[in-house]
Structures are given as structure tokens and as C-alpha cells.
Amino acid sequence: MAIFAPDFAGRPPTGYLPLDSSTADVRPRRSLRESEKRYRNLIHNLPWALVQVDSTAMLPIFDDLRCAGVSDITSYLAANPALMFHSRNVVRVTDANRQAVELFGADGANRLIAPVDYLFAASPDTAKRVIAAHFDRRRNHSEIMKLLTFDGRLRDVQLSVTYPTPPEPLDVTLLTFEDVTERLRTEAQLRQVREDYSRATRIATLGELTSSIAHEVNQPLSAITMNAETSLRWLSRTEPDLAKVRQLVDRIADSARLASQIVQRIRTMVAPQLPDPVALDLNAVVEEALLFVRHDIEMRAISLSTALNVGLPQVRGDCVQLQQVVVNLLVNSLQALAQAGTAEGRIDLASGTADDDVFFSVRDNGAGIAEEDLGRIFDSFFTTKPDGMGIGLAVCQAIITAHGGRMVASNHPAGGAVFRFTLPAARP
Ligand code: ADP
Image (cartoon, rainbow, N blue to C red):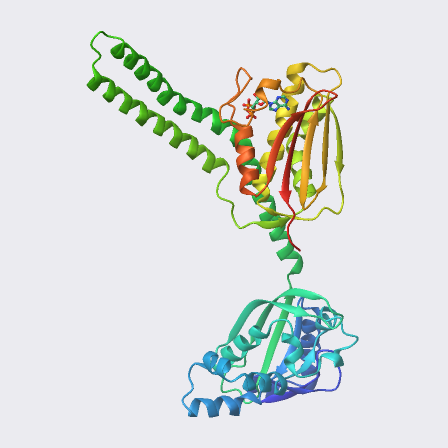
């Protein structure tokens, strides 16, 4: 049997609630009233927004479709958008609890008593899947969807639909919405932290990577030296053994190729092909890169000035690679200041626009770059440091070039080195 039940807000009844007949018949009226009260309380205190939907209008439509041999409702809806439109307007919300009123930012439950169209305003595909699950006589359907509230907010909600079990005569469907916007945001932040961490590890391992590869590069280089010296000895004989020399020169060429492959491998490891470039705010890239060296800067009492021009046009590129460049330049400046033993160490950062480009520069007040080194400072393996690898600037330049930019090094007239790169401004 079905009893006449009050709605969620305790207003006059709007629909029947089917109850099990054997218990409903024998219960005294008072017990029934209490049961209704419990039901109301339960619905009201549910932590989720809940709406009751009358989808009886769909039953004859579904029957007709089945008679016509339709079994794949999803394809049918895709081919017949008019049915979709019709369904969203004949299926109606008949009741809503307090949380639903709150979630939708409505001024009262009455606002929600309407065709279901508004429920799916921001997620039309969800409506299709809800109808399909009903057609397929499923008991539940659940998914995360976007919900547009009456006051124009977009929320992420976990939708759960409970369909009536056939052959119930009344087609009362219950829809609950759990607002998961904050949860998804927290998960996204967590993902971001993980990505930042792996980015930090990548930048930090750059140094370790290069020194471990030094060993590998040294091997073919020593082989080249040894074979070249032996060749010279064979050539300086009164009767040079050209066959022997040819053999040695072949080996030299092999070793050189191997060394170049190793260098190539380093390049692709630290400056891989530009992944899908994205529009970036160069100042934000610099600010984030600063986090990696800020501690060192503070420990050494270096005064850092940042003249980052606000409102820079964006650039297109890979954030991690550009950060590698900035961190590398900053680490070089820190090392230059430590080497020079400058009493009042300074690092000045600047960004701005130059023609159609965006520029970034790092200047320090270290000893600067020897004039004769200016032309080879970006060469791989050029270093003036006892434990240097001479790879950092070569990688920086490769990254900037891959981004369509240019990088130059100079000495400031007032002393110290200046490194500056430009990147083309992204088209709006
Ligand atoms: P590494 O730091 O291993 O030497 P880099 O490619 O980063 O490799 O730098 C190459 C060389 O460029 C350094 O050895 C140094 O001579 C010079 N250099 C880089 N940055 C500076 C700077 N800020 N001031 C002076 N010299 C610099």
C-alpha cells in the first residue's frame, strides 16, 4: 500500500510514498505520524542536497521505444535530440530538501519545483546518462557533474540517482547532490604539490646528473688522446705505417661519435624537446625559481633586488625548463660572488619588454667574465671552476633557443656579469 506523505519541508503532501503493506496496515495512526516525522528529520538532516523527481512521463515513452526495437538508448538520444529536450521538460522535480535549496542558492524550495532542465544546465551530457540508466532499468547512477546554481555559481557535485525498482507503480526517483568542489580543489592542490616536488627534484638532480656523466665523457676523450698520440708516433717513423694510422683514426672517429652521443643524451635529458608549450607569466616563473635559491641568498647575506615589470605580455613555453634556466643563472651568480669574495654581494633581477620580446636579466657584482672568455662561455664543457662541468650555460642557451629566444652574456660597466635572455611575447 502507499501512504500519503508530507513533503520534505513538512508542507502539504505532494506525492505518495510506497510502504510495505503488511506493516503499514497494522500500525496505529500515531506510529505512522512518528514515522513521517522521522522521515522528514532524516531527509532534512541528510548532509546532501536531495530532490525528488517524478519521471512517470518517461515510462510510456520508454515502452514505445522498446516496442519499436530500440535497445541502445544512448545512440537513440544522440540521433534524436528532440527527445532529450522533451525529457528534460516533462520530468519534474516535485520536492527538495533544505540542503538542496541552499546548494542551488534558491530563495525557497518552490523555486526548485520545476522541470529538471535546470539541474543539468551545466552538464547536459549527465542528463543523457541519467535517462539512459533509467531506460536500462538500472537501480542507481552516480557521477561527478557541474552544477549551475540560481545565483550563477558553478559547483562540482557528486550526483547519485536512485531509481524506483520496477514494478513500483509510482516512478519516484531520488537525486542527491554532494558538493565536492572543495574536495576536488584540495585534490588538485595535492597534485600540484606533487608536481612541484618532482620539478624540484628534476632541477636539483641536474647538478648530480652532469657530474655522473662527466665520467662517461672522459672515457672516449682519453681514448681519442691516446689514439691520436699513437697515430703521430706511427706517422713520424721513417716509413709511416698508413694502414695502422687509418685504423687508429677510425677509432678516434668512433670515440668522438660516442662522446657526441653522450653530450646529446645530456642535452635531451635536461633540455628535452619543448613539450606542449603553454602561455606563461615570466615573472611568476622567476618568482617560483627564486624559491630554490632564496635560502642560499639569505644565508650569504646577499642583497637581492627584483625589478620585475608588472603587466608583462605572456610568453609561450615550458615552465620547468625556463625555471632551470633562471635557477642556473642565479646559482652561477652566487658562485661568482663566493669566488670573488665580494664583501657586499648583490644580485639584481630585472624583467621587461624590448620590442616584441620579453626579457629577463641577472646581474651580479662578482668579478665578471674575462674578456677572452666572453665568446666561448656558452660552449659545452667550458668552465673556469675547479669542479665545474661547463654544462649549465650550454643547457640554458639550448633551452632559450628552443623557446625561440636569445641569450647573451656581458660585463656591466660598473663591474660584474650580466646574463640576459629574451623570449618572443605570446600572441594574445
Ligand atoms: P660551470 O658553472 O660548471 O662552470 P656554466 O656553463 O654554468 O658551468 O658556466 C661556465 C662558465 O661561465 C663558468 O665556469 C664561469 O667561468 C662563467 N660564468 C658563468 N656565470 C658567471 C657569472 N655570473 N660571473 C662570472 N662568470 C660566470
